[in-house]
Image (cartoon, rainbow, N blue to C red):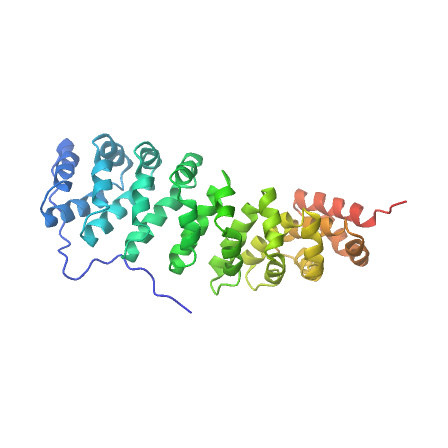
Length: 341
């Protein structure tokens, strides 16, 4: 069922007038003072002006140097929802800049933002997760999210958050898994992601499969994907109407079938026919992963016997413009034709 988009519009009773901005070098120091004002309207106006100024990376650099981040961290817990909204918006804009992201790492902004995971205002939570998603793209940012102990909370939030925010959480988790996967696995991520594979949203199905791919790069992740019976669901997604979903599901299946248990599970789920379709498809984004998955299934006698009737499909890939596809097809043909004598 479709959900309403999260609105960034201010409540109708809020005066949107920005604070008058001083000229030259005095502009940011004046706003920094106003952020600490006991007057609510002054804080609101200062934040609105700040949101305009921090689109310029030079202003972001100066703001961090002047100590804005400490004041913004304090305002994240303000009783007024508009102050919290504009504080997270300002931080979100700052996070778009390289200097802003590194400033967040050095000033403990990630841990401060964690306090907003249960904020009652949707836009505050969305801004928070947009920041996490951008921070996780940096190795240092992903480490910061892990050190803040956020992974179990992010995994749990996949059960309850709005679809828009779930997409951001999945992107964040995908990048954090490049650093470490234990916490996600220990938090029941595989079970929750299995449920997301059948979500009505194309983006969520695709991103959930991509996170499972990340989990499956770890031995324990491969085992859990098999134990939680995820492979039949991944096989069903090979025939999804969306190419992005097919590609993500094929990648996750490729890694899951590295283990003997995964290969037998994929054969039992009748993965070979849909994988062959992906190999034969002229514009298939999943072709390379499909070839590699079939190569692993060919290591089983049952799989090799079935695939011997489809050598032509792999031979056609030898003319593919991609060197990786041609190389994978060559290996697949050799494995399928192998004889034990």
